[in-house]
Image (tube, rainbow, N blue to C red; front, side, top):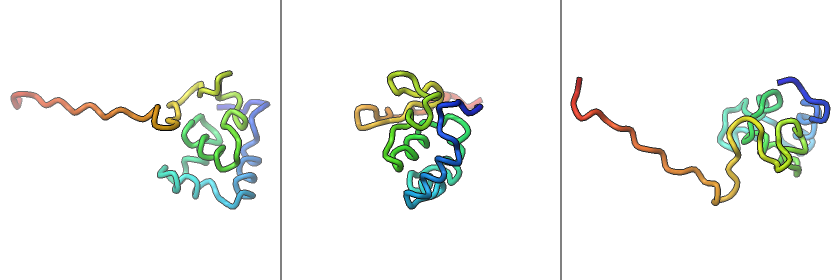
Length: 102
């Protein structure tokens, strides 16, 4: 995804995270994501990783990446970020098994 003029520059984001005393890979690991998740969010929409970076910096994700969010602050692409218990994931549906083996 090309960078939009109002989005923070990726190097500015990395510098702000470093100034906060963390690294992108440490933020990813602490959130239980892959080590490169936060770094990948610099280039492509990844609402969960964006939220982790923004929380560390004390801003909203739409402040860092306004091109990725609508006027209500909802992500334009990617999976929505679960915030609080009211938006928890539902239990997965069990797999159905065939009644007879083939």
